[in-house]
Length: 147
Image 1 (cartoon, rainbow, N blue to C red):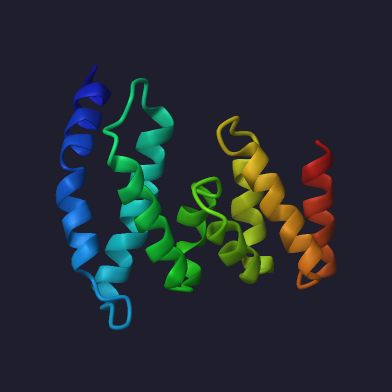
Image 2: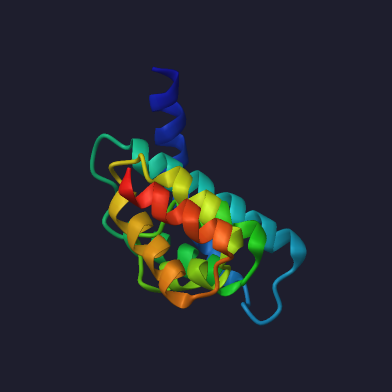
């Protein structure tokens, strides 16, 4: 029951987080704002995956904007958060594939999720196709995809 109240509070305050996001200038983002955006994306993704009812209609636009903003940072610290939203927009798998070896473990960890399995597998295949993976990571991807 506690989680339900926590989630309701989180969802109800999303508009405040959206306002903060939309006020950021992607060309000059402070380190503090980068870390805030990365952490917020992770938190939002985890809450959405646990949601049992409909979310506000305009929440989707905010979620996509947040994911694209974080992907645009090209910051390896965002890999774990981006791996949780691979299904949200085509730019997310491309951003993760660009990280190459560094993204593989985070993507493999999402494969068991029924919510993320298809998009994680697609992203892992994109990593393989890019030819940028080391032999060890390519083998790990191949093994993970056949399980």
